[in-house]
Image (spheres, rainbow, N blue to C red):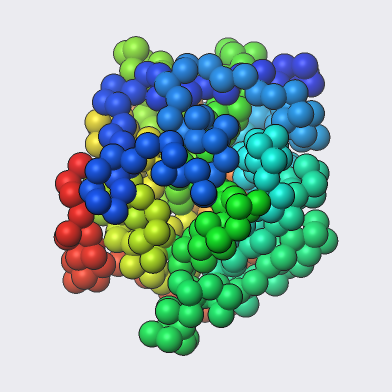
Length: 451
Ligand SMILES: *Cc1c(COP(=O)(O)O)cnc(C)c1O
């Protein structure tokens, strides 16, 4: 029997699943500068109204537009695999299934929301999108999507990644995107940071401030965010909806669902359609996997905080290390964000998730074992999910239990080989946020209201 479980082209889900319809505890509204809940109009200079409506919608099912389905059909439905060789290498009583989101044009799950956001902006009459990117995955996804829908694309790329990872910025160029290192001299937010810390490695929080500043200044420009927001989680549910059908096809159901968590979107995309089962009493263990250098869900408080360094975004109720937090320059650039999706944070607060954190070297070890058994080279972000799979498989062996694990293989690492090389040369350190650093970085939220 094939280890690869395909769906037919006409089995791409035609609706996204909106967990906001079923949250055990509904989300609290974001707050404006005055500390009062904000309304849709307050976001109108940053996002198009059709996406703002999705952001606050509590409709359970939302139709996927035909134009977006057409774009999806380039790489969707994505294959689900059983990782038999990896299972054999581990020698634990587990069945491991994974959803391969590395087959998209940009090489990760991010195009699932990029094509949707480009479509809705285009439909609203917008000409240009600005955004931030860490490792470059989101910038690539958005540049590809903007090219497809005829929009201009401006990307602020975290400086450390811009320097360490030139290939994704070159890909953005091929798709017609304009990518600059952040902090830059092009915005007030960037100039402020550079004046204070000229050698900063940059952070996603800073890059977001720059992108929003440019969007607000021009009525034909809007901002696109690759994770964190409710509408991004919504678009990513196409992953979990497909995975459900594929698991059914082989009569399997997961005991454990795993995804790496930066802003939470690939985890949410796989998990949310199954979270509904857990709310209705099924026993599933959900594990968002994050770096010990940026332990948002495992150690940060649930607070009201800004999504960006300059404090331009509304305050969102989420786990946050503080909007001024600049994480150690680990190679998993996509997991270096200070905050976490409010929907994922809320589920964690309600005890529905079991977040775990891992050291960068155990992740590379897991990623290399993966490549040598299953063939595909995972992104450094994805290797955090694989480290979680390894840990859970060993635990199953110790407990003498058989488990079925499903995880999101969020992207390939073919453009992240420098990190692998440095790991194999023994040049990488494990960095763990200290108690003292944690106390310092959360202090910037002291004046914010409590959720
Ligand atoms: C961006 C990215 C992530 C982290 O972002 P989430 O929103 O948490 O999914 C994980 N894996 C890959 C390959 C990425 O590109």
